[in-house]
Length: 110
Length: 115
Image 1 (spheres, chains in turn purple, brown):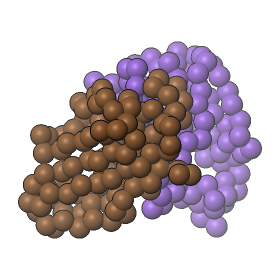
Image 2 (cartoon, chains in turn orange, purple; image 1 turned 90 degrees about the horizontal axis):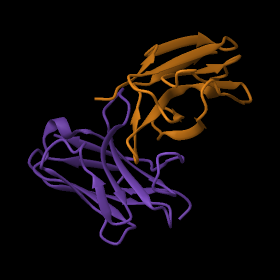
Image 3 (spheres, helix red, strand yellow; image 1 turned 135 degrees about the vertical axis):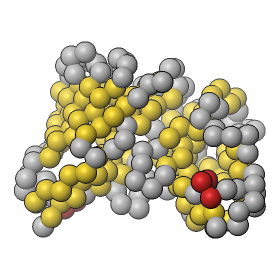
Image 4 (cartoon, helix red, strand yellow; image 1 turned 90 degrees about the vertical axis):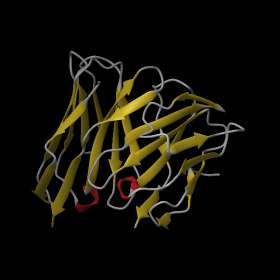
């Protein structure tokens, strides 16, 4: 079945360093979504990418959708302690549902 | 309401006990999902409703799991004869439309512990 993998599984960075997580799908995606889940919290929607090669920015966060629409990345510039959490990508499976990636857990050391 | 509401937030069940988890989605949202999230893992799809119709239940792990949304709003996930492997956070999410191109709003989840 369809699989969505993310690397790395864990990342510890010093505050101020950059961070990148990569998402890879076994199938071509019509779109991809990114969610953030704070420790003890629930997933919160960040963004959706639709077009091949699309790049979107939200302040220090840069999201990219691959040309083949099978991979995506999230890059955070100059991490802050508020960035702590697990970042999930999610790709549609069929008409209705999303398959979530394995997630990347980010720890930021002050 | 302002967001997706789930109750209870925490549930401890003895093995073999039946449990019922409630989800109150955002008013007017057509789509409702249940996900299961084990510790340190991503949310795993359980089932999907479009209004009152359960269109996909392929993720339900066994026939002990049952979900309903009789009036197209509130949904209940029922687990019969709970087992220790059912321990997880159960997340409910809702979406405005029926297609997979809009954001999902998640509730706080119900943490189920089976002892």
